[in-house]
Length: 168
Image (cartoon, one colour):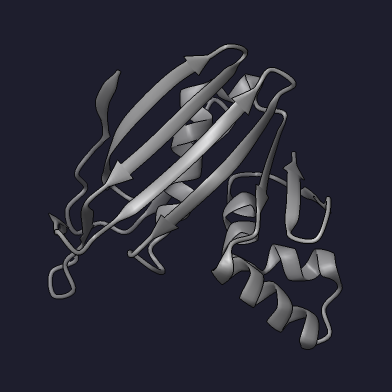
């Protein structure tokens, strides 16, 4: 099914909310959400064509705005982020999308979140390594690492070359 989730919070800054000891992060953007159960997996796709107006800070629809996330939840409790991207930088949109997918899956079922570091995260990771950080410190300083930290994830492992897994 395809449903709209989200809401409009015109002129307000993105924020982390805490309800029942669960972190939920919202920017105010509205996302179209498509959830499919395929065998023992659940696939969630989020899409938004909204951004923040540069002058007013209000949320507006724009053909130039594009935020997407595709994730697969496996019965072992791992949520794998297949890919995500956004043209809305520095506003917490990636954190919002990850938070929404966790909610869609029902947070209690998500034991870990894993992903392959894409171009931006990989570039930041390598820049941090070059600056003297350990691999784990460098992961936490990527946009993905910062998102996961703000959502309450405290442990990370580097599973392979670009793959990382976060746990609470």
